[in-house]
Length: 209
Image: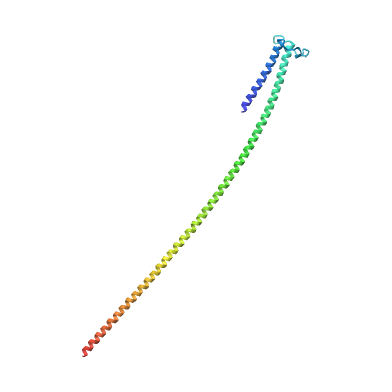
């Protein structure tokens, strides 16, 4: 963009210089053809005679040439002033644009940093919430596991107690059956003993008879 601007300024300067030269040449041609008025140039104006470099110039010709030079110099000075003003304005515009861009960049950086800070804060908040949920889930799982283990222990204890009661009942039943068997055997022995005594008594009585 800077190179294009410089080329455009140079082209405009060349066009202005050519326009100035064309205007001066047009005046010279008009004067030679007699179209210029006598009042356009003052013959009483004292001018320095130029060094001879060919055909002798008349005062009118030299005045035209000097006026062309003065006009050219004045226009060149004007162009230089315009160019300086343009350069100053362009430099100010570029500086303002750069300052604006820097301000916009700083604002964009601040917005980006704030956005990143909000994103980081949200991420940390979500991470804390996730850790909290994990901790709560682990706590609930531990509570459920403890309930399961307690119920399992209670069931095992109940089963052990039931087995102990059943074993005790079986033992008592076995002891009772054993006692009943012993009692029956003792009764049988007593019955046999009484029968044997009766038989012996009967035999003794029969023998005595």
